[in-house]
Length: 233
Image (cartoon, rainbow, N blue to C red; front, side):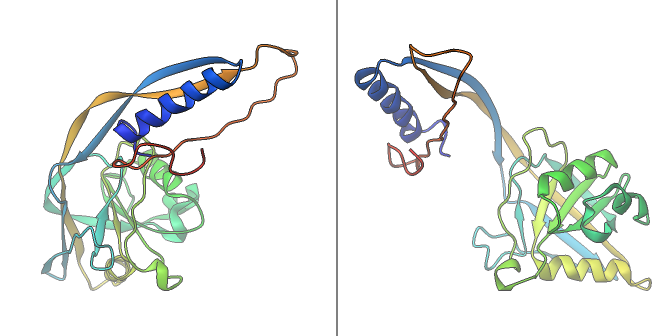
């Protein structure tokens, strides 16, 4: 949703005004602050496999990118190459993290897509004190090879990137090969955006039995350059 834009704010005003004019509902707009971040610069990811260092490709064109940033990742300036730990079986269970060798504590963890959602994987990475989370696509079909844009929970405390299937598998294979030496360094540079208000609208019928309440909910979307409802009005 294009929150804190002209389009979104006009949508909120339109809905509240329409309900006030055309219904006898009690209308209440409530506001709460949202804190967020944005990239200050394109993130950097360097990989080292058996001493061969490669500066991996970041691009907003995901068909060309080897990795992409993750919304609500935290910042990191890791200029020393740091060893990886690959988390087996998708990283969706405690035993996946407990069986990882070496332990994920203080290391960069590589976790494949699938079996549970990305927020759960990030929560496990935090619980087991990983230093950084690298997620990668699973290559299960032709549309699951490139990196994708995802969002973690706003409370996420880990730096995180999303890798293509090819890059993730290359790192995983190097890790699993006892004769290889795989490590990465990365920089994610963020700037804080000042908190801004986001509105909720509650419309309550003036009549009826308060012990028999039906709640009907919807969300409104808007695009930054177009005031009004985009879908799900």
